[in-house]
Image (cartoon, rainbow, N blue to C red; front, side, top):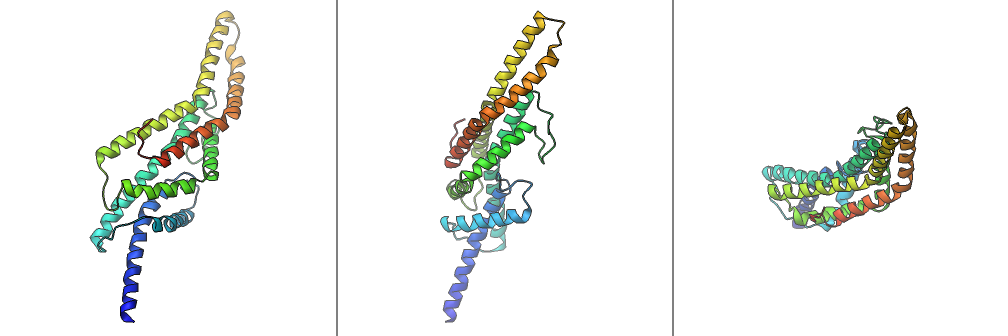
Amino acid sequence: MIEAIAELFELTEIILWQWFTVFLRVGALVSLLPAFGEQSVPARVKLGIALSFTMITAPAVSVPTLTMDLDMMVWVSITETLAGLLLGISIRLFILGLQTAGSIAAQSTSLAQILGGAVAEPVPAMGHILVLGGLALAVMMGLHIRVTEFVIFSYEILPVGQLPSGVDVSAWGLSQIRRVFALAFTLAAPFVILSVLYNVALGVINKAMPQLMVAFVGAPVITAGGLAILCLCAPVLLTTWLEALNSFLANPLSLAP
């Protein structure tokens, strides 16, 4: 009886150690995760989300049995936290891509100063709308499922207790930044095209009628045109963004832009 209880305690200790190891990575990831890790989400809610992801992820991953001492605990805490932050930053870049696209669109349509400080991260109104729409769409389309699969797969590319190679992380990070900025400029392309056409037309009108105050006439036009394009193109832009996010979560090692 005593031997059975001792074996049970030993098995429980191993399971708790493995779950703690998974929680370190998941907790760091959740702190940067879109929708679940926003600044407006209370810390207690984030902790509950991290525990929920841990309960889902831990049974599906194979964590090697490590020596349970203080040195190993400190080392695993450092490596797993860094791995979680690396994964979280790679996903968070897609939100920065939406903000960048919104900033480019707002600058192009003279809407950059409207509601610029209405949120925790000061972005123009267009960027705020795109971010909220993108977060809502991602959550409705199963972001939590994609992230769980992403975390499980991460143990193949970032094993427990091992620091990733600096060269590999640098190449992967640059590829991810290039991908996100290319996506941001692609999403903002309709607004940039509208701005170019507007400025060309304004220059022609000003050349033909120098006495006309074309700026006062054209300002409402570019503003209304920007809002109209936002209403018409927002579904397509957010769908394109979500496809890029899901593609990255399904294949994070892809170096394609």
